[in-house]
Image 1 (cartoon, rainbow, N blue to C red):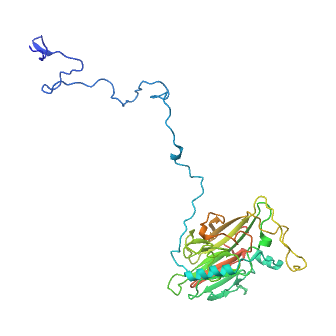
Image 2: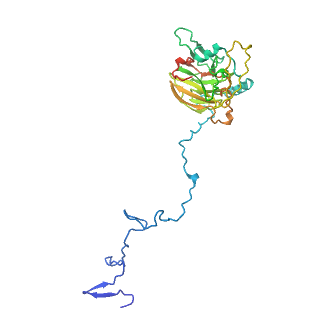
Image 3: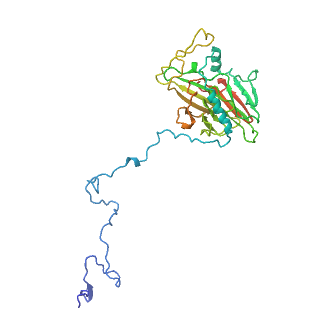
Length: 372
């Protein structure tokens, strides 16, 4: 028997192989040695109820240092952050005025600076308060008709207007301001003053180019170029009905805001001025002998520095949203002079093409009953 031969033993008349640990003689006769796996689970696998050995809390490396935590890779909680600013556009998707008119308006505004706060009579102030006796001023660019509320069957403080399809961009304004800076500026700490009015669209036609006509509801300081819609030039803001965007001293494409205006709907626009916590404004000069016919201004009748101004918009009597006038703005748009409560602010209704509409100054006729 050679040294490489398998050791055999004669037991009970049959050969038995000398078995080594892990050797399984039931394996195939021609497959060579066959080994069974060792007892227990394979490495890395723990069956239910199996607990590998360890050294207590922190196993498998109780004494190892915790991995380095990079705080800047964590996802921040943005639930309490303010919403991102609206996307600004270079032009409107619906209709855009000729560039020559925008350049003419820019030059006009440079030659005609904003007017300072004007004095008013007690009768004027009462008209501003009720709105029932406010009138619309028809600019020369407006082609159409204005029907004043004079008859017994007309609603007081509601002007009915009809523009022609030949009417180009034009801006109608109120004859008296909705906000008179001398008298309406909030002076007590954290006190507020709110102005508001509404426009109801009765019908919308087409303009001379066959495009859908529309209008804009806005506010402006005077003087204002009447061939420009409110919101396009300095000292003005507006929500435009053709694209639903809002404009503040923005003669480009505006910012997304609401859905386009439809016939049969009523829209409102207002501003809320809030005095800072500790205002200390100087009073205006007021010569009683020269201005005896005018209503005297209150003791501190000047817009306090740092006053907050919020714009709000309504549709069919429901609040639809708003924005703070001091929001972040593109540097190219310029400032917001004339809208911070430092000068008088008038209602401004823009229109182009054929539109039938009503301008509602009388607070008793408003669909949205705000506390103004």
